Length: 514
Ligand code: NAD
Image (cartoon, rainbow, N blue to C red; front, top):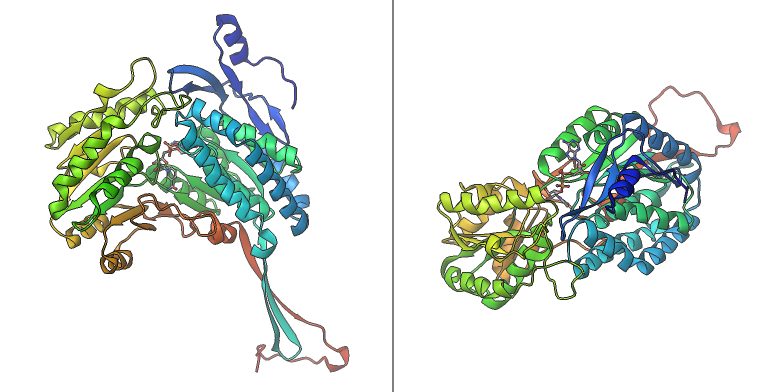
């Protein structure tokens, strides 16, 4: 790694004795200190202390990374499929060997508990493993004798410099959803990770280099709207993947496509879990608690609304309530912690604010996480439960993105499905029932991209693709899996003949195959 003179943040940290680590960019295979003079704070959410200062890139710095990626593209796209597959296998091994190291970085900056962070890296690894099959995935089609002496075949080629803009909640996995298939397809990559937890991306960049990825193929620029806009407007960025909140996803899609780019922009969510009267109450309550409070509710596939149908409501709410005091909230590095803090103080306060608003709007606050949060300066909020929530309330309308579970009571299956389908989001949804016929009807009728049947968090395995409907996705490509390969390549169809010059003649008619 390149040796650097102390940055302003480093000098300041040294001067006041605090341990604030500067976090720089990764461009052309080296650490590059930011020159914009702007940095953003990175916190350890469990202690509330600032641990890092991340460089926020200027337009010029983004341009530098894109130019480096553009230069690297010419040779990287020419690397054989066999060699690219070999590199992906090596990357897979290194990520696997360093799984705990990566997971610890996630705990330190995101706050999720270590076991959950290990799970995040594992799900990212699965996408890398899928990308190891790139020679098979890029096989084209061939039609011999499409016309007399003419063969037609299709090939898929990389699109060029691809940018990835990622959210804070999966700082390792979501970038892997993007860079693994993009690089395997022969593209070069500029990643703009969340400025709230940027260190995992820097560590990954070093692993990719150690695996043998040529310098310049994978770059990381940190930043905020300035960097994002520079990527959106850059003429040499040909495709852009985004994962984050819905308002920004919509902006990214509209701005990126206006600038001629291919864009997939995954947005926010409000995931409903319908529980029918015939469901196993204990199983449904276990699932609801796990899916609502895992990662402190900061998952785009978290269950945030339980839709209790008919008589199931009272026993189900009681079963959920009974489980709440047992959820151990604490520092993610403590072995018995099951739920960590929220990512920032502001976000914690915003989430907690929904408890008051909901009560004012008529919901019942059955568990108030402000009372059960661990003491100290960490950004903690305990598990919170709202009952008798209705669709007009803020807690129902907004994506809270925290450990607050709402229960909406419905009279029938039809009413429950209508609620899900009327919701502007359509990421994941689940149904809990013992009736296979109703489950199949639900799968047929529900307007969401990912459906769980007695599975609360139906994140597709790596050889399917991940994506929501409605306001949860802008663009027409889901991410990773077959749709990811399609997104990061463009098709070319070749029509070919090797005629005997002796048979050549002028023919002004339109070419036909019969
Ligand atoms: P966010 O939209 O605030 O930020 C995402 C990225 O966009 C970050 O890199 C950020 O720097 C950048 N950004 C933020 N504001 C911007 C602006 N005004 N202009 C340009 N760029 C901007 O999202 P977040 O808070 O980091 O992540 C949580 C959100 O992501 C939730 O809504 C969650 O549902 C969603 N999410 C969705 C999925 C999915 O697959 N659909 C997966 C994970 C997270």
